Image 1 (spheres, rainbow, N blue to C red):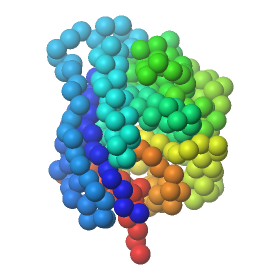
Image 2 (cartoon, rainbow, N blue to C red):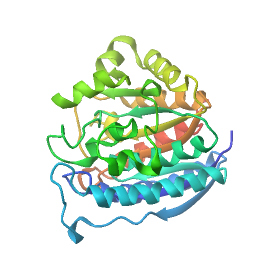
Image 3 (cartoon, one colour):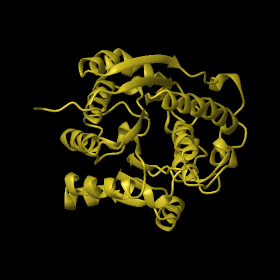
Length: 303
């Protein structure tokens, strides 16, 4: 099914301690994203990058949530762009940057559907939970906080984006590929009501069964599913150039299966790809895989 797709780059690295993920959008464009999507029959427009402040320009502020105001400002602009895209019948394809941008992406997607009194579900593909708050975060890095913000926990600068919270009901959030949670973060993950599928679940049950269940939770009484893919979802052997690599991730084939199943659901309303760090990548390998995974999510099949 041909889609009208609008690409938005968000060259944000304020949420992470290791620099370089701000070059992620460029790496994905260099890997031929737009051309490959057009080959699938989609209409594609790339509106360039949303303005992001540079770390060198300002002080990080509160050490429990570094650069929070600058991140929230970018997320607000991102949310407005996404709402406009959806209103114009375009599927937003957001290129990060670090994962803190998810707070803006979801404010925009959820805000659009809220105007029609509809709810959406969320598939979160990531090694990490990103469910810290300024009180629980060991680092103060905001890229470890966006999912908490999306379900209404944490700094009001992020939770209140768009003037409502939560953006998504926890029961409609499915987290897949999780293998690295901070000790205090685990409590919120367990108590919030989100559905967590760890690497052990994938090992024991297989990606097909896990994704089928994850999609069922996200689709339950919702009008569409937003997808956020952190490239560290994939094992570092296939995706070495990521913000925070963690051994023991999903394989190349498992990743494609997960995204093909998302496409099969016909429910995806937005897609976000984050945390590609070309500085530590090998010949743009991670961005090339990122483009392949976007294509799987948007209908590329083997046969």
